[in-house]
Length: 139
Image 1 (cartoon, rainbow, N blue to C red):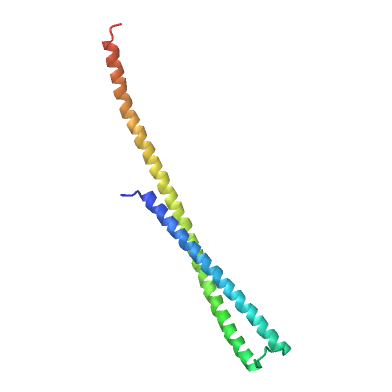
Image 2 (spheres, one colour):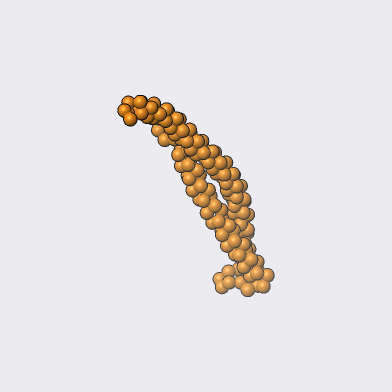
């Protein structure tokens, strides 16, 4: 069975990937928001200056502006929710990283302790063996 530290490490890696995906989604939403804002500005400018695109009426431009404004507000709300999600995931990743780091440190301490215990068990046996060979040596 894998150690707790290894499992936590894999979990941290997966959560980091999930965080990166959420950040990418937030970036896509911000780009969409920017595009919609630029389209809004263009449509407002077209209506204000009465330089309507060929084949468009002020009513059709007005409808497009309404649809674009609603879309921009929707994307803005979604981006806000996504930002909250990114922040929450980031906090979870940092917390889990601290837990994984502590588990790894515990694992290293346990390995060190076992190694020291093995050395203390082996050393007395070596001393007994050296005393026995010295006593048998007919110098």
